Amino acid sequence: MEYDLKNLTPDIRHLNDMHSVLYNQDWLKTTDNLELYYMYRGLEEKDGLRYDITVIPARMLGSEFVKTKGHYHVNAWQELYTVLAGSAIYLLQKTNEIGDIEDVYAVKAEKGDFVVMPPFYGHVTINPSETQELKMANWVSKDCKSDYSDFEKLQGSCYYHIKRSSGEASWIKNENYKNIPELRFEEPLKKIPQNLNFLKNG
Image 1 (tube, helix red, strand yellow):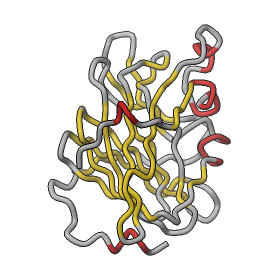
Image 2 (image 1 turned 135 degrees about the vertical axis):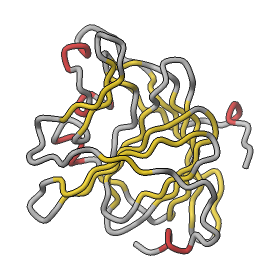
Image 3 (image 1 turned 180 degrees about the vertical axis):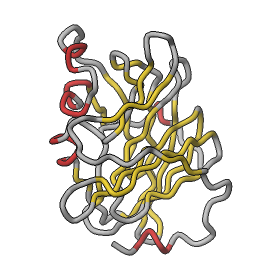
């Protein structure tokens, strides 16, 4: 689906909205408030599902690649993402009954790829490029609610994606979490699922 976003007004996530989830807390003291990414919600509704587009310009947040704030879904809602332009890394994590991370994995997706956010997995989207804008879309139930509290409380996800002084991109563990599993990597889907009814069950 193509939309002329220039004529639409997005919700804007500013740097001031992200203080609690960023790796470089000292860097925050040296910069002004910035517009980080743009959310165009409810562009279409179909069979109880909502279609959104998010645009994340290339930017470094100190040494960390720009990312979304991160959230869990209330209840068991799933979500389907697709990359429209640029590339994305989706970081997904699941907690157990006592609040420890029991699983964490990343999916790198390019234009045309699809990624499903399974039930009970919190997720963050990262733009891993310093030059290329990321434009992505999602289908999700219009009844789905987002919970940001765990990410805010623990200063983001259990891994940060950063650029080291050598110029190498790297993953580092967030020390505010306990017992973090090793990060594994999964492949994106190359075709959209034929039936999106699984997104309707929360």
